Length: 430
Image 1 (cartoon, rainbow, N blue to C red):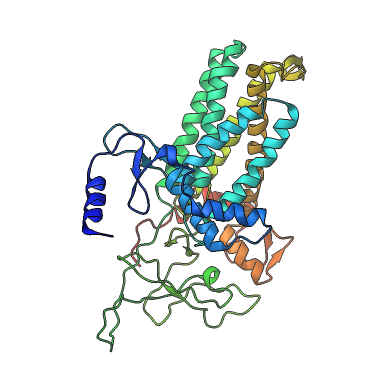
Image 2 (image 1 turned 180 degrees about the vertical axis):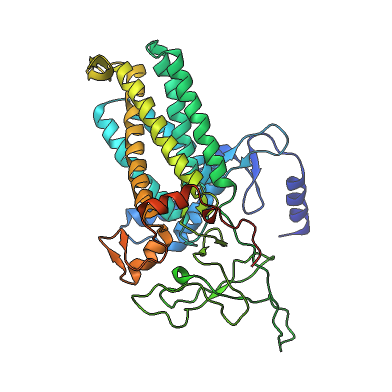
């Protein structure tokens, strides 16, 4: 490229952009209307499909990068052109309301949309993690928030429009939503991360290198004798070497050990490959809240689940008794009785479809709450259960033998809710 051409490109990049213009991943000025123009990866993909040939992974990666660069943009009027948005955040915001609207067309379309949703979720997640299986994504968190907000807007705009819901019932739903989001805020605030100090090692090489740390993890990160090696960058302990605890054997319940006297992690500490941090009393990394669940936020996590179920059940009951002809049972319980003519108009259909969608979500959340209740009853975490299963210490999948932390059903629940031993060690230096 000549100096004149390079100067033209630089001048074009420095000048202000109109609302629909942007600088693409190649550094060239482009326009939103040209979203389908000059896309070699798209042409090559369809050419392979029509020829019944296998599409290479490099072509799929180039196609996904092009779609992300061109499609996920928002026009602005501040001279910065079309701003690029994260596809894992934007996609659920578009897909969830669109599926709910399409599901109102016909009962068959409702079934199709509800079958499409989980398939789409798994497909998008698999494509997002093609290059890195531990790549962090806001997709599930955005999907959950989009679903909750969409359902609440449908309730406030369409269900209340029937004028069958009383004021105190509307306020009850609103208050429950506020409490649920408050517990969600507490859950995401801090899962009890451990702050690990690096210790430099003498090096015989003259080339610069990052300090290495030998870390002892609990039994749960060491169980298979696998080494988890990662690189320390920018002071972030995303790179620790975990080794098998000496003396651990199948059928036993090893504890955290000091590896070489350099670092001693507290018992029940777990390493999250997604957060790249050590979490005290780590339960699991919940993709639906984009955060780990540990010692400090396990209670608020459980309360968030409970409030989600209570709010969902009450909202579903109000919706079904509004769009369906209700009937009073025992002079106290109002239940839906006649649910015909639901798809006659959009107003009734969108209420019914959203209520069905919420019913599915609440049912799945109930299973998750039951799973958590089984673990807490044994003073166990999801992380410990999965590692115990590898050691052959489980009975009927969910029950663990030789658990030294199990103090009985009542004491386990008291420790979870009341005792300070469950409060964690937030900000503890190791």
